[in-house]
Amino acid sequence: MVKAEQVCKSFGALQVLKGVSLEVGMGEVMCIIGPSGSGKSTFLRCINHLEQITAGRLYVDGELVGYRERGGKLHEMRPREVARQRRQVGMVFQHFNLFPHRTALENVIEAPIHVNRVKKDVAVARARDLLDQVGLADKADAYPLQLSGGQQQRVAIARALAMNPKLMLFDEPTSALDPELVGEVLGVMKKLAAEGMTMVVVTHEMGFAREVADQVVFMDGGVVVESGPPSEVLANPRHERTKAFLSKVL
Image (tube, rainbow, N blue to C red; front, top):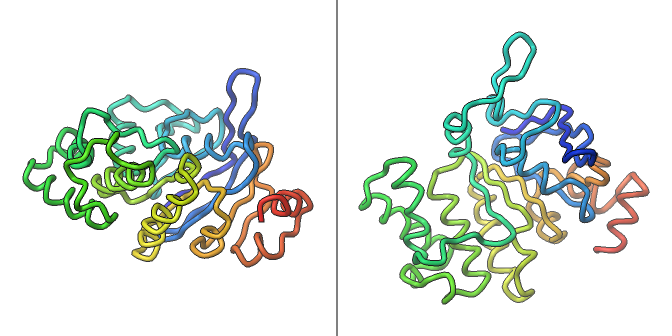
């Protein structure tokens, strides 16, 4: 579902990604861990072309992301074509980014109606079902300010799912939450994983990674230091840098 080949990303003179290569199979959950500033979130944003890569290739479901390749050269896609690709990838951010002037239900139906041209009654029925799935059926008419952080994040997950994505990206979805609210968001994510959703999750929640991930990737300094099943990377890491990081977080 995701294939990265030597992906590089620079911001001016600062090289944030230095040749990241990895693959995520359909239905797999990949958790990316590592210290702050290691390039995890930047890589995630490159997957749906919120950041343009500087070098390399990124594919989602076999399609080159953000570019067309002709004669061995990459040509930037038009914004409309990028938007079409992006519709197939749901993204949940650290800060929930809900529309504050819209209810939970209105937040969830906005994109299906205006982007996918879904009829309102169909979008509303689907949104109510999704809010029920994330445990918020009774909060459909609540505004974001009336919801806890954990509830807002669950609305954000429902909103992403409303577009029927083939891939879900989570950028530290629990890091802005009070500790007692983390479990309710991780519970929704575990359910998604059990239902076979392909997911790439940047996270500091090692328990979640151990329980749910098919692959754990440890990044540091813009490169993949180590990757493999959680039983290897978390329980028996090979690299000293991985061991040092895990000794501080486990």
